[in-house]
Image (tube, rainbow, N blue to C red; front, side):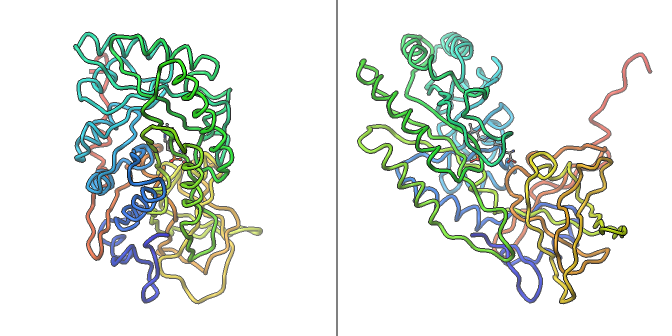
Length: 422
Ligand code: LLP
């Protein structure tokens, strides 16, 4: 469910028409809907129980306006770098609602997190455990942690976003988990609270999630029997969102209810506080990337629709063969045509869609890549020395540029000439 729909023949984000945003901010531009973000947060929270902690995964979309919107609803955040922690704090997320995950947290990042007083560090290796304990001890602190365990069960929409398999780098190995938990319980700088698991992203196979959660439950029970009761269980993110539905589409909350029911069943009787780290589910359908058609390049067997957005702005199709629906901002009544939708970047992977059937388009027309709110702008780059794409947040009939388009001065100002050239 989202708040992008047609009113008087023009695609709107809530009460704002996308043509107006494109005119005032230029293209390409990301547009986010506050109502969609808010709805997804609330629906998820309801599905997993009001007492659970929801830590929105900042990596999906770290835009300040997005983070502020969620912070005001009481959301916590899951972060994976000092930059994300800083951004969350700047958006008004209190430190005691911040979780820090990731396989390669540096000593400096861990020190920053400890000093900020964050809620929990999800420790992923023995080396990290030792480093963190030392850092906290030196500061006279005891950092709350959970141990992220690799359950040797992976799932996800693509091999590149599956994290729970034995061959994936994430978490401590299943066979080492018990030993490391006991070791952590005896370290001076950490307070071990429980376990964390995250097996992948864009998951619809709740059976795989259930099996992984079940393993965590078994481990918690085993530890409790040894006098080490856990009080927290972080079940990660990963719940998928629909990308491949025709337009306009709608989907219900059934799958979230199923997920919530499954979680309740697996954790029944466990005396732990549950945590969740949804990213895509909150932000995915809350954003679109609006781009303008530059040229039609007709070949004998196909027509390339060249648009002003490129793989540096939205890398998912190039990187994961991801599908994004394309909705014309002002669909024509003319015949449907087949297009290969491509960007201006100098490589063939800069392709958003192949043989896509769309109402006839001409140069100057606007189209929107749907479901681009998660892992869109947050993965953008300046490849080909293109300016970072701007981001706009809509609320009802208002909109705000929450990240202006980068300027060429800013882009060129990033580099420094080597001293020997002066
Ligand atoms: N927690 C941890 C520890 C994670 O690694 C991730 C995502 C999440 C939570 C949030 O997962 P979500 O609920 O969004 O599925 N760039 C890829 C997705 C990478 C996901 C990385 N980890 C894409 O565009 O599909």
